[in-house]
Amino acid sequence: MNNKNNNRRIISVQQILMWVVIFAVAVFLFNRPGSQTQTLDYSDFKHKVAEGRVADLTVAPGVITGTFQDADGKNIHFKTVRMEDPDLVKELSAQNITYKAQADNSWIGNILFNVLWIVVLIGLWWFVFIRPQRGDGKSAMNFARSKAKMQDPSKQTITFKDVAGVEEAKEELQDVIKFLKNPKKFQKLGGKLPKGVLLYGAPGTGKTLLAKAVAGEAGVAFFSASASEFVEMFVGVGAARVRDLFEQAKKNSPAIIFIDELDAVGRRRFAGIGGGHDEREQTLNQLLIELDGFESKQGIILMASTNRPDVLDPALIRPGRFDRHVAVPAPDLKGREEILKVHAKKVKLAPEVNLATVAKGTPGFVGADLANVINEAAILAARADKDAVDNADMDEAVERVIAGPQKKSRIISEKEKKIIAAHEVGHTVVARLTNHSDPVHKVTIIPRGQALGYTLQLPLEDKFLTSKSEILDKICILLAGRVSEEVVFGEITSGASDDLNKATAYARKMIMELGMSDKIGPIALPNGEDGEVFLGRDLSRHRQYSEELARRIDQEISDTLQAAYARAKEIIESHRVQFDTLVARLLEKEVVEAAEIDEILGLAPQKEETDGEHAPQKSDGDVPPQPEPAPRQAELF
Ligand code: ADP
Ligand code: ZN
Image 1: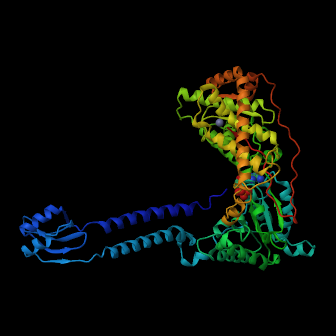
Image 2: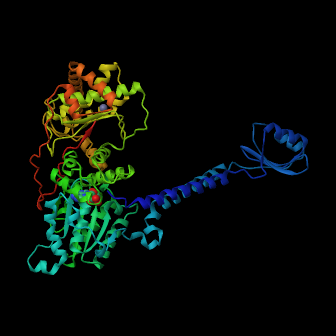
Image 3: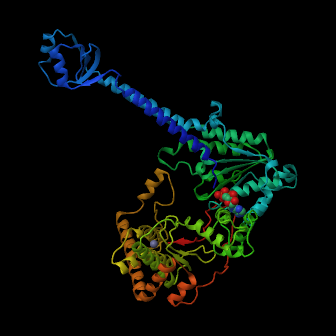
């Protein structure tokens, strides 16, 4: 969500380049033969010996060096590779040539060379990783300084008006604002002093924005740092930075300290082999010390954000530390419209644009995505020299955010177009003819992002639960692209590989994590995909079930995929006429929208989106927070 680190990255890249150049020059100089050294063939050398033109010979085990007189009588340094030649000594004596022998000392050279390498590597490492972190290289004393950014209260322009769709979170944060505005009064009225507030929710839902807005509403200084910046190469640096951050904030109180991605330092301790990551742990400990050490009376509130509240060290969320947990969920239909409105203020919209409609077409989008949609639409309108952003810009912007920019310039042969069309129509037909799948929005063979073509399904509004039938249908839809290629062309292409990966992942998840397989039963097994990075824990978790069960699981995954494949094939073969019509239409128009798809398939129009029950938003101080269930997102095949 933020580009704070970009500068540092750029510096590093320049430095890497600089060092590569220096290193290359050094290697060149090191290996460069002396300017006047000539390499002679051995026969040439023998020749010169016979003529008595060589002198100052040094005979080493592998090489002979010395000088010879050239035709002009100049002495030239030479070397030659030594060969097995028992008569050489005799010949040299016969010519009265002085020579000395040298013991094999190449190992000294080797050691020197290796030492040089190590020195260069350490230098490189130091320059790339250590130096840029010393407060932009200004002074060595900055090493342990926090890189937190402070925002002046006077320049604090973000308020709750800029944050939309998270009314409950705003409500929860009112206390904090009241406290920061007047800590003494708040205490007198008997308010319980807040200390640490944990904002949790998916990336891009506006956690950073909310924290800034709290500072803006209260008119206090705002310090922000990303927890990942604390975890450094050297043990102790992170802890020093945490200390520094708190000191700075205390000097500027009342203030908010905001720590982004808290889970980067706040993961459970002792998770890895041998006690885990020392530096991370020290940083975490320092954070806990600071948390315990400051009194809310000082007018400082610590806020932090995470999208994995479940992996946080329990010590962090204990009472007296991060004991306020505020959920920042992905916005619902209404929330999306509000967020779009906030961002649309910055651009000029044509009267035809209806933000409620845009909100409907963007289920699963978070605030950052929606801000992005408006931004992309404005760029598109400006590029086309329009006065205002119109519906076409908005539609294109939404698809850009889902799938990346169109790639009109990519040239695709007619033959490939036919394969892509058949593949996509396979997804579309099966998506439309299975009962538990999300509505099909459109199908296209215009390449976009990584995709050569795609079927776009938009889920019904705000669905948080997924049933077994829905997953089975999804697997069936995913495999349908490959099925079509087989049915139409009798051959399959590499275009289906991504579908295959996704289908397999769904099957695996269904069987291993969700306990949805009759044969394996209701059991949740570690799937190795939940982002747990600590080696120790992973190793121990991976062997929690037997080889025998592992084999049955593999069999069940394979059976599930086979059955879905057969079902997709059955659906396509029994609707071959409609299938072919749709392929032809797609080849002709490149995009076919929902209504036309339904017409060709002879189906009644799909269900309209309903604004169903919203999942309750919950934030409770006593229960450790769990990740918010993410609403379903738009999907491409
Ligand atoms: P997070 O910290 O949850 O990852 P951010 O606060 O960094 O998300 O959000 C990134 C950007 O997305 C914000 O700067 C803002 O432009 C937009 N945004 C996100 N959520 C919202 C929201 N609820 N209301 C308005 N804009 C939002
Ligand atoms: Zn596909």
